[in-house]
Length: 160
Image 1 (cartoon, rainbow, N blue to C red):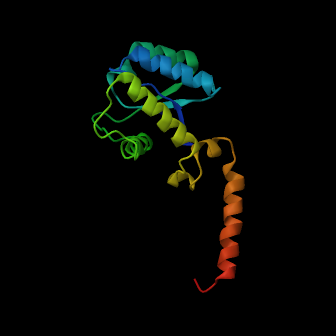
Image 2 (cartoon, rainbow, N blue to C red; image 1 turned 135 degrees about the vertical axis):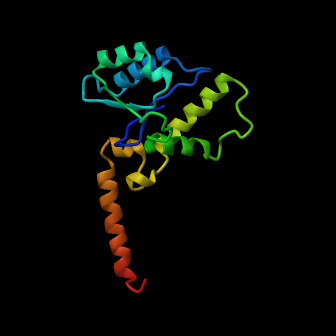
Image 3 (cartoon, helix red, strand yellow; image 1 turned 45 degrees about the vertical axis):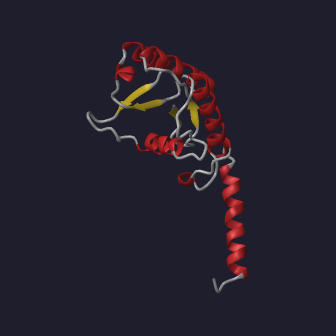
């Protein structure tokens, strides 16, 4: 998965039996094009795994104008944003505790999860709006209305 840090939106994902630099490069390219951020100061923070050090993805990052940022060596939890996202994945109520029966089943589940996460999940670190609301700038109006509502209710019941 590729996550936008500002909005927490999952902007790209794939499920494979294994990880390769070629797969990572293809995912990155599709994500950059889909989000219309080609040559726009994009920074990709990743772990130090082999796929992310692969020459293919490094060349693709250069072509797309993506700057690389890597976790510290031998530190597996150096990216709190992705750690939080994957915790949400694993603790989602529909996560199949018995595992997936097939690659297609896993892909279907992740597709549904990403839709839910981006469009319905109210993320605590972005003031309980959805990632898409944040990315589209809708959070400003939502949070303003929420503030007025909270103040109105405080005024109605000052003893609380």
